[in-house]
Image (cartoon, rainbow, N blue to C red; front, side, top):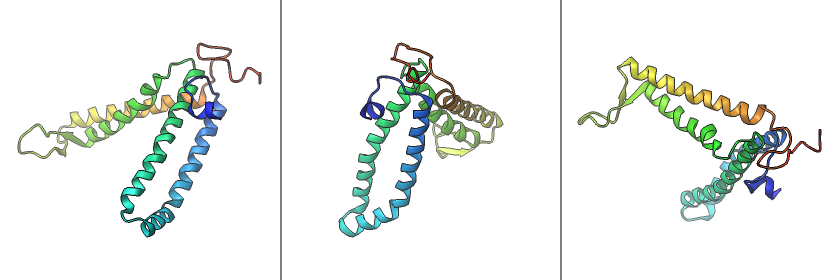
Length: 169
């Protein structure tokens, strides 16, 4: 289990990737469902509840992000891709989508003295450019979903290890 959750070595198949997604969704639902109770308990017993609550979230978030990264890297390994593809498949769309959304409706003009940092786009070229960037980000997330959740891994051994389905075929 430790290897599955924290190691960057080896491979996992689609079933374990979907299992991780389901467990993650259940954990997130439980987390949000317990937030009101946690807020009341923390507020009743601690002098500065906001600070402690955010520290608790940070302490829980760091291991969760490590697990998330490790599982996704192992799934990329099953597709015979380096873990660096995580940047292309996950981080790049996280940049493209907000930038495209912002440009489709607003343009950054903070470099013009006397104008607000963000103002509505009056030039349709900026809006079109923003929609193109937004579309590229959405397409990248679609590719990420297909790559990691739908496509079969490399049949047989690859440079990252043995086929996780070798004993099942």
